Image 1 (cartoon, rainbow, N blue to C red):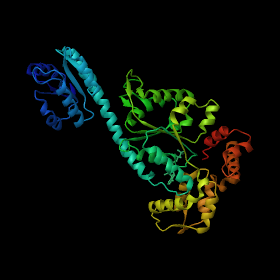
Image 2: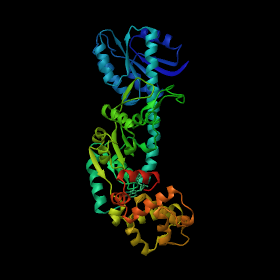
Image 3: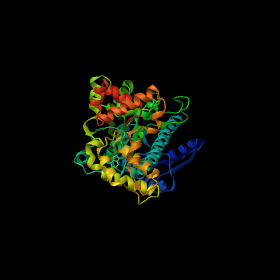
Image 4: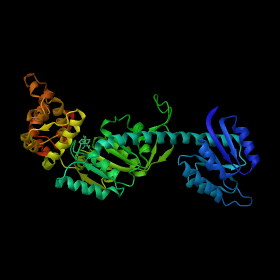
Length: 456
Ligand SMILES: Nc1ncnc2c1ncn2[C@@H]1O[C@H](COP(=O)(O)OP(=O)(O)OP(=O)(O)O)[C@@H](O)[C@H]1O
């Protein structure tokens, strides 16, 4: 027996009784009702999975207006409701209009029992997947709220960050696709969340996807979802990130890391705004605002045929460049205070301070890992410092990314390469182009190596 709950509303008692007799054998609850005015109360008392609704209730009236009215009321009460309309022969136009207004299907009167059952079963599947999407959306919203909390402080008053704030204000309300460019740790995700929070979609979900972390084989099932049985581990239907993001914003981080075949797949979704779950032949429309980010030189990669030009044009309606920390050294003191306060609180050392002489050094440092590096350096220093005042050593020594203690150990070729790149970057104040020139390689080749060694 199917556990679903069905409501049938029709003014013809005979139709109701016959339908109930048949459907009772299949579903755990089949409620019938002649008066559509009772629908709101019935819905309050019971969570129906499918509602079968007649289009016309008054004798001699067959314009379907009453049906439209009640359809509207049902969807207002529960936007996830699954409504099937009951129509007579000759009313197919009305049924089509009703589907545009949110009904999922229609059945013609008089119906064959098996046909009715088939329609109900596929409507139930839809109900199930709507519920799943809703559940995941809620879980994501909760998660997003928690993350947002950590991301809510946008520190910095430098002219460079002022320009970023201005751009955020200008694009947030427009629904335009935005490409956020900047080195690792500069605050690209922070910018994306700020755009979402100020947009008309602020009450909907913000879904962040790290494309760099999704393997080639998982790309489709993660982003497009799958249906039960599509592959061995697909034990049940699962919506993908695009479907969950529908109504809200999707943030595709590290878009420069996508391989060319995956770029083509992504482009198709962006063009048609429809997804097909793996193993399903059905397309689902998705409505999302697209924000992308990367630390890779996308324009250069287009030139080198490593990134599709048509994809770049799809995602970069507006480009926002988040400047590296070394271009806004004025922000270092405020950021330092901010992180000192955060970690002072977290590690129960509320009165911890930084030695004054350290500040000048921090402002001069080139911060290859940008704000994330500063953040981690402060956290580490708060943990390690045995006094109330943090000295230069605790904040800076580990910062360069390698520890002097290791110096006397024999280095592998890989470690030597890493240190060599780090040293060269330091010598060039973190300027990637100049470093690449000195090392005799292209910028892209240098970025690749930096990524390999985790140099930010
Ligand atoms: N202006 C800022 N004020 C306060 N905190 C910031 C600021 N910019 C970045 N941060 C913090 O620095 C960390 C890194 O930021 P974020 O994750 O947004 O960077 P990213 O550019 O997206 O990094 P990646 O390229 O590695 O994905 C986060 O913890 C974020 O809260």
